[in-house]
Amino acid sequence: MAQNRRSFLSMAALSAGALGFSGKLYANSVQMTHSEFDTPTIIDQLKPMTDGIVPISDAERKQRIAKAQQLMDQHKIDAIFLEGTVSCYYFTGMRWGQSERTFGIVIPVKGSISYICPKFEEDRAMELINPAFGTEVRCWEEHESPYEVIVGVIKDKGVKHHRIGMEERVRFFIVDGVKKIATGFDIVDATPVTAGCRMYKTKTELALMQRASDVTIEAYKAAFATIKPGMSQTELSTNISAAFRKLGFSGGASVQVGKYSALPHGSIVPQTIHEGDVVMVDGGTSCEGYASDITRTIVVGKPTQRQIDVWNLEQEAQNAAFAAIKIGAPCEVVDAAARAVIENHGFNKNYKLPGLPHRTGHGIGLEGHEWTNFVKGNKTPIGVGMCFSDEPTISIPGEFGIRLEDCLYIAEDGPHFFSKLSPSIEQPFG
Image (tube, rainbow, N blue to C red; front, side, top):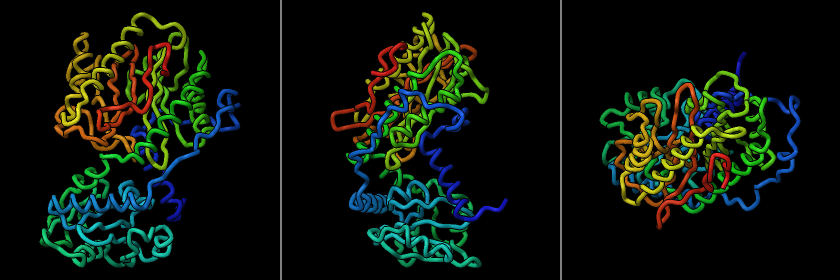
């Protein structure tokens, strides 16, 4: 069946949003429709949490562009190119998406930004462009090369170092096309510029992330109250999404039950909740694009001593990671701290199972997973404004897994969690 461009871009934007929202490919994404279930009363009684949200201002986006230009100057880059993805939204507030036709923005080291656009899309682009950041649109016709247009813009803006930065989401065919046209130029990674901006959140960004976190906890509280033996993972996942909608947001979560909770991102096998099962819920929402990512793990009914012991060890590892966070320290020390706790209790080392199979935390912001990470080998100094997840998982194949995940931000006085931690296996919400 043929797709028109508008539906193509809508699908692309939804796909990007799904990945940006959590960074995870949820295994049990199928949900029940509204007609297939009755909304539980506790969820139906939820009220919207949308009042008082302050979006990112034009002035703040201008500051971002200015910082990017400063970083470009430091790294001897004449200009960077971004497609219409998350970084484009970060700098301009514009959402476009990706298709087979090249669209994007050029940010030069000096001067205003320029938009690269298919000619027949110019009118639509002008509807979406915020003139506060510049109104120059350079177009290419269907038989022309968008790569020549990109290079032409960069040359017109002024060239000193003959280095063009490509944002990490720019696809290969565009990078390769520009490289073939830009003789005498080096094509370099723009991540030091884009991540160098996006890693460090302002108070406005932190407030949006705080709201997303608060909403997620309220959605979880309501949905967790509906958990009962005989419930399918799909029904619980549907209840969580319904709770987000009642709160005025779009969100969701992966639900993994019993032995499948040992798979960090779940299984495609349909699962039913039984008495004594471990249930792991991992998901979130976004507020003005800024993500939350929270995991809670419980036992339905009375937990065994084994389940309690592993849960408590996971809590100890999460706390050890948090305690290791010091401004100026390399990110890798946080991973080492959590891993040491788990390994010192007899679990395997070096990602082997049973044990901790992945890094201790990831960056979070406009994408559920973004720069930078709490992982071995990452020497990036922890700095004010950075945001991370803290989520050392304990996976025991064939038995169960425990993950507690809360996100945090770095303030002048050190780290702070966005959410209250789980006090115990029987009390998931603080």
